[in-house]
Length: 425
Ligand code: EPU
Image 1 (tube, rainbow, N blue to C red):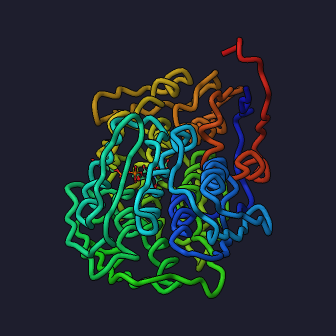
Image 2 (image 1 turned 30 degrees about the vertical axis):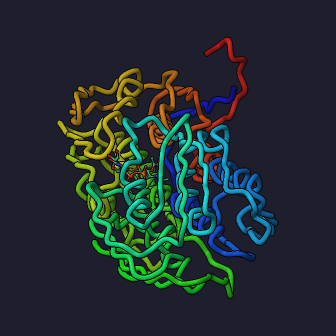
């Protein structure tokens, strides 16, 4: 079992290059199944969720050629199977996109239920509702979702009960090759949704309104890729380095990012006392004082992203008075606060609210990465803490951050990746 040992404290300084967006890539990879031919993808993040997705695609019959670790050519002309085993799908959440992608192409689909970070209840009722509206029959049994159709999917009006990233993506995937027009309302507007629509449109799909409250899709018969597609930079990786720069009172230029996507995070960093300078495709974050305590409420995009609240909590933990975080998306996202308490943070978390009474210093301790973003928060806490912070369960972090140790080390952090025997756990 591997652990990170973060030797703190340190001040981050220098430049970091952001990788492709995980949550766009995990939708675009299955979207390639809509093409009975080759798709060339660039800026694909080299992370374990992507490697898991490639394994699933290969199990269906895809041929994947690695031009480099971030550039792939996926040939789906030989895909004959529409069955993805629970063993493969339960490794991560985004395996549910196989449903929307495969039901457009096959009459019978069997997908094992998805896994992913334990952030609370993660129902898929809205995904199922969308597929049923388009004419598919869907049942969940024995750990699998079975979807079938006896005639081509037909365009429909879909109104989601909750704003859901995954359901919006799945509805887009299923409607792209359907007959007629689909109008989807109360949709999610995250940058990765726009990226999926752009990818599909670049191959002939007719999707309008991605990034707004209503998406309209006119079904097309087939898609063909004419030139390679480059995945957008990762909003949450960018935000993680922005917060790390501020928390360590550093000076970091974050390259290959989209400043517009960062607005909710930038606004909160400025409120906390950081200086944020935006350029065309980079952002510089500097900070030279103790953070001002702030309050945050997580919301769907363009609100403050739930996937940034654990990282941002380090600034609140060190704030000059009392700050709060209200989590509105996931009910179990505050597990990391117990870990921060081991490092000297003063936090009371009840239900959807956590109150942070700022302390002057955190102190290294053995802590656990409860999930992907909580793990990133533990690294940032370790960077500001006095002494060594040993972060366990780092496989969560490796699911979504490419070369995280190398990237932080280049900025001056001292992080070792050590292998320990399981009995130490
Ligand atoms: N929801 C339902 N029914 C559904 C689907 C969702 O009630 O059928 C609820 C959820 O319980 C939640 C809310 O709707 O309360 C939003 O869930 P959403 O569907 O938007 O989440 P997701 O698609 O499962 C994606 C990201 C998460 C991110 C959330 C929210 C991917 C692969 N995952 O999850 O990312 O937290 O959107 O922005 O895109 C991460 O990257 O660390 C991560 C957890």
